[in-house]
Image (cartoon, rainbow, N blue to C red; front, side, top):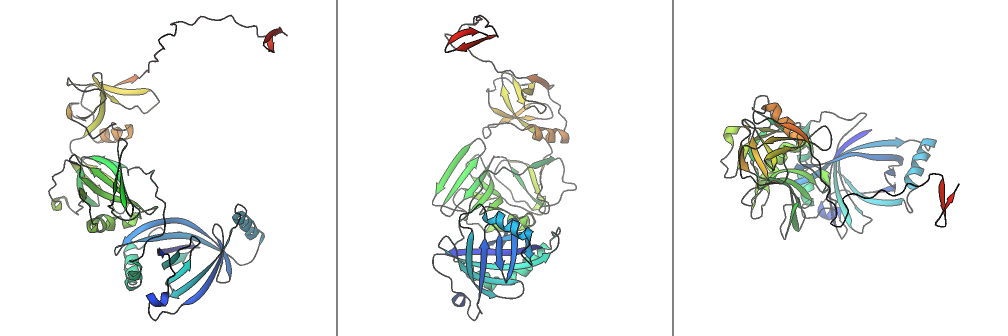
Length: 432
């Protein structure tokens, strides 16, 4: 059966006492017997629990986990159950763990419980179960979910003073794809200025911030934070200001797609920002966008239902690398095959990136904030919206020259060919 639930977990080094936190609550004792990884005995029943997905959802100032799990009860100890049990315990030296929970049941859907974790800390957990279904739910009533969760504000309000359990951040993230279009017609979502800076990811921990920008530039700020375990997408402007655009992950889990509008419209606005940090402003209409002092390159429309991002730009351009009188474009078909077109301007610097107009191939500006040009996927996307009208683009094969050593002869003399019917025994040649 497929189970969906909200979960919020905090920890501390001393035990939680539910009756001290929630006066008048009734506490029951529940013992859960675990066998790694997800084989357990609970409520007098053996079951396996597999986590299908876990996503981060922002609501009422807190980051909840939205957990989709697949629970399979085993009414009796069958051969299939025995095989799963052996698979669970076979790779662990000590696979058994008993968890004694102190549980306060609020109603048929919600409960609060505490237990002693194996790492020596104590956990306090709030769970609200949406339901159990025979098949995965495709269309979730997201607005109703938020309203139902909000009814328990006086319960999870007691969780705020405590810290989150340890987490592991994924630092191998890449930016979300952006599709170029030439008009707003047919697009839905929130709108913002397309800031023209250097894209990067901001990793915020409880006591420091790590920045990773395109081109391999890293920077660490100690003593400041934007939240514990949050990964932001950001744009760094020419004056050094960092503008936060979106939230990719929270404490190791991706943010829920259906929660995107709340993240962009609510969460970013309530952040306490350090110096030289700002947040992107999203609106429903272009007319409502405030004036920005930063460099812009069209508009961004973020569809909060599908999480697709569109870039609206009337005059398109390419970011390409200049070398020896030509602008070079990456090839698509095979390695070593490149495309290039002749530069119209003189005095350009080799190895630098320039923004070139699609209309005539002329240089619009030098991109000091970039180290690489557009990928062939980005170039194809742009040229679909506006055909290339600049100098002819030719395909060439780029050959890398091998330099020989100073004392190495230009031609190596060919040695005497050995008889294939000869073998070597103790360094001496012997005929077979």
